[in-house]
Image (cartoon, rainbow, N blue to C red; front, side, top):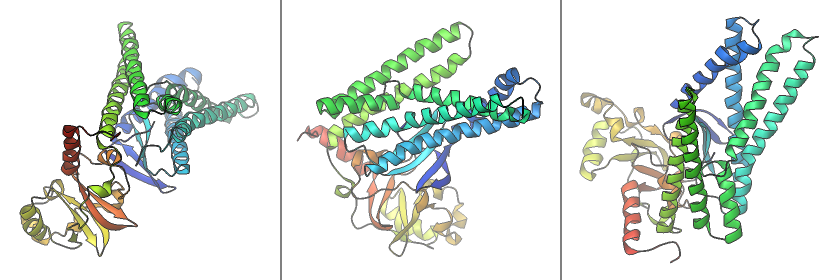
Length: 384
């Protein structure tokens, strides 16, 4: 899936793309591991010890989520082929998500990018099933291959299932993007294609609600999980409709048109007391950029300041509490306004705009929202 998941922590950086884990991933990792260790593997391999079963289950769960990362990297690599930047890949409660800094430039680009993920999952699934079968055929010679058979067999099944699920024609699933790109390519109307794909996502969510309710009625607690998936799909599809309306409102506006071109930043090493006295209070700022020379070092927010006792402000440098530049969303002057708006976090109201690592401007969330509302009030849309 493609999109953005806030509230995650970076665990690695591969091919220039951050790999992040959302806190909700810990829950699903625990559930998958427990399910394999308590139900799946004991049924197929009753001779295994409890410890061995749990270890094999944990390895299987890790490899499954590794395959989800590979699925998302497939999206990312195709996106790069079409000059789209991917800021991060995040594992979360319902799988993985690749965060794009802007929407695909064409229907063809979106089609190939969306299809790359499920295709990769099919390849992983087929390869895993082949390895599992190979291990099965040699068990009489090498009984120690049982864990390989179990792990590969599960990975084969679950990756094929991931591919099938993602190809459901409802936004934001990959199948919904394939549907949107196909309609957009035929009718050359992205807004119409988005509405159809998003409505399809809402229909799919409704069907999942009915399915989940049926499962619960039959006494199957798995219906709760299906309901959670339905909730996610409905919310994401509705968000896509809202975003498309926003796109119509702002047209082709870029970050460079709204950012402050003479950013007022605070040098690295400044004390928190000086930051508050000379910058935060006089200018009523909610966030301040920190620089080293002309290079962005990080951002300090009001929430960061609250983590330090006021008595310690005079002796605490901004460097100690700032969010480092490496952990901030990448924003460039040429980025479109809509995708940039999604990069504001719950506590981050100011985005530094950089070019080649240099701070060239600041983008305030309230300014962006005010601009969008003004365009809507004046009746502007993307066709004008």
